[in-house]
Image (spheres, rainbow, N blue to C red):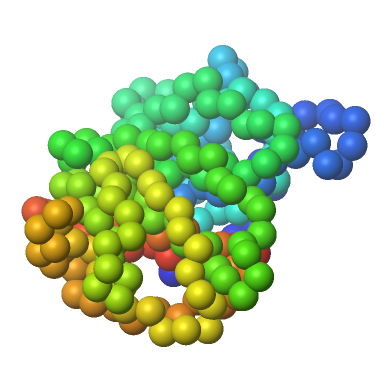
Length: 220
């Protein structure tokens, strides 16, 4: 996973009564193989000449604090003229809440077309001695089930997700499988999770196109 970068986005910052009136927002690039420029404005505002996030790279995560606001986010191939080019992805009227935590993910839909999904995260602490894992299917791939130690735990389809609490400090064999049949989609990976952390695991790319991959983000 690439280093999480802190970034202040002035376009979504509004005057609030206290510093507590802001949400944590993650913007995540989940489309392999292409760098993009991200332009973000308050809803209805003109597209600026300079990108908000220039040269956004696959698997990069931007961590910011912003809101409340309603914003337009447009994603262009890196270097494209935003005044004349067609955006690869346009998310218009996205609501950034006053508090809480959301993730905005650029990814492929079931047909392989670029799209974006907004996830509302559970910011509460995991149970004592545990970590929370949120598995998010954002790939051009069939529905999958997550098996832990060979036991199916949850099944998800693009763009949905499922959360589970796992014991911390214990090596856990994990695998994505075809639901019901148990046929392997990925090899078994044995992972150990740290106590008190929240993990977001994004399945991205295209299974048939040979770009299937994962983004793993650990958040306290």
